[in-house]
Image (tube, rainbow, N blue to C red):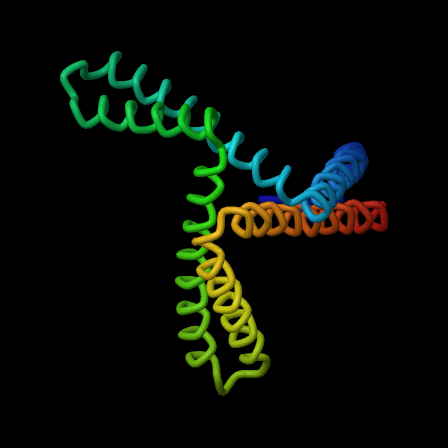
Length: 185
């Protein structure tokens, strides 16, 4: 966790933080804009990323199972599942993107439900409506993703757009942190 108090007391650390946060922020903004303007490309890139992540995880689980308990069939099953799923996504990324669309659908519906519960729990407090607004937006995104599940091209477009928007705003946040760090000098 970032400790701004410690960061502001060390000028050299503050300078490094400001420099690298600005660089990463610009990279994230560029990647985000690529996702926003070319959502299909971002979706396929995201699927490849998850495919490689699953493949690598499968190899690591297999190594661990081999080293610690060669007779652990659940470990071998998990390693096989990760490796095969990762390889399938790498060789045919479109079903991986569709799977990500289904995962996003479930996530947004659960997020909406929990935010509705939080909003009504906070209701007498000031700004409780922000949680309500967040839940309505999550519900809308869940419905949009749910409606796109049957259409691979819509799912391809939505996943890339969502990842692009997320990367863009992460970059904006990093740039603002860099600016705040420079003001602390």
